[in-house]
Length: 69
Image 1 (cartoon, rainbow, N blue to C red):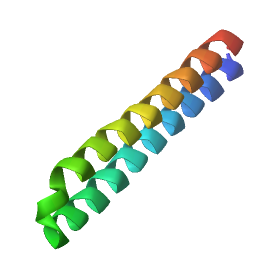
Image 2: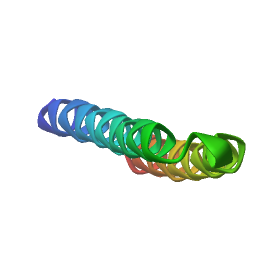
Image 3: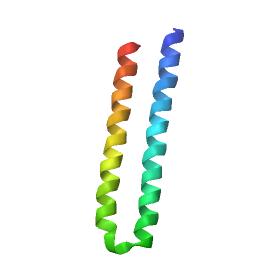
Image 4: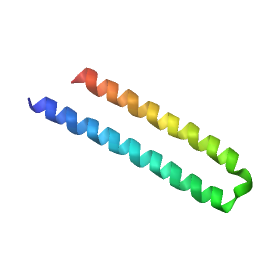
């Protein structure tokens, strides 16, 4: 029973980390687009790629946590 609670805490921390990471990317991208609107397309593309990589790593961590639990 204790391992299920620890698994839930671990999964919650993973999700919180993913949210913080994507939020930081979005914040930085919007600040960059406000400073240099002429390259907003390149910034947006880089932001989407980085957000996808973070989500992929987070999903991998969730799968590993569920397999261990």
